[in-house]
Image 1 (cartoon, helix red, strand yellow):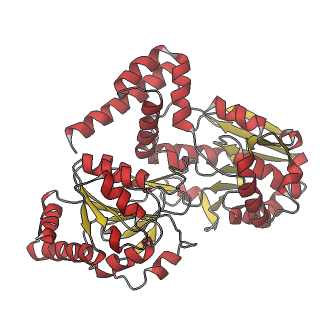
Image 2 (cartoon, helix red, strand yellow):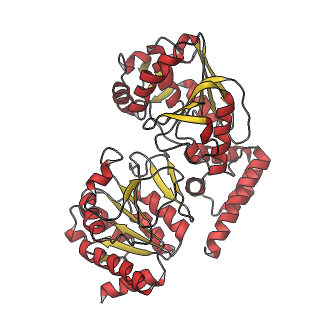
Length: 274
Length: 204
């Protein structure tokens, strides 16, 4: 590696250490390539010439820190992203879960709520929503607020609807939202049983026993060590025979906790705790 | 002469990874290059094509006449030397200096996810001078700024000759962003990569 490269890495290390010690947000074990790109975008938007300058400012300016943390957590998913995944959950997981008298689901790293509303609609259509508690957690307070508001740009409605139909939706997606101005707002009833909570897979521990953890396209942002920590939390949190869903390009087989789970649908990346 | 200089550059840097990007016409362009590559290719090839082929296994069907193995990226897998790894549809593909792959669902860049710029930028950071970036046929400007970053980091830059490309906009934009990039036909690219691989075999 070149000296410049080492210097860049050092600046990133110091910035992340500073953010952690000052604001308790731990990005130190995030996957570096994506993190680096996000920091480059933050530098450009905030008109900051280097990471060292950003570090100096961020330690003294809480609102700037919140902005940078926003840059480090933003991602863009869709409702019913990967329709075959939701179809698999509908066809194979929910029939089993419906045998429980009450259910707990954990949407880990819920971001702005795309995954959460997809799952809530699925549960509603299988007549399970009213006896389910959903925990929706994320490290970003801004993202949680957006998830709780449940409002998405109207330009995204078409993709959402198409995905919903392909996922085996039983009605029309518009049954679940009202369109107003330039946005669509999902119905309050979908989140009546949702507990929104600030939770970090990097620093927090297990908070409840659940039947199903969905954590899709979150672990891609972590390095291997942090990924394994998160999977261990899921393992501890799940009941015996509980289910775990990962993103379609994420897998358990290289994790240190791989043996705690069996793969039940490789294409959908659905796992069951042994 | 031009081909010898290009070959000498690969040997001098020396190249540890190849990143490629294309859009409209990109699949055919890539087929031409990959078909010429021997199985003894010693570096990983990472590819972003805007037009996915539908399913994971489809890559090996599309590229069935190629001797080098092809696969779709899994998060945190290590890019294998001699293997062509494609970005999955609707994910950005990035790489670190150890060749570990990262995926992201960060916002599309210039409406593209996967984005060629994102892959190239990460490769420039990861490999510095030791990466070859190749921009193929396409009808938008993705890849131009990423190729510029590879150039700025001292890496090697090739662009498909726009006059011979199915869609010229992408290679034209890349050549404009990197004026000293080598503008080559697909056959020339294939020849150089083949000689490079075979030469390395002979000399160990």
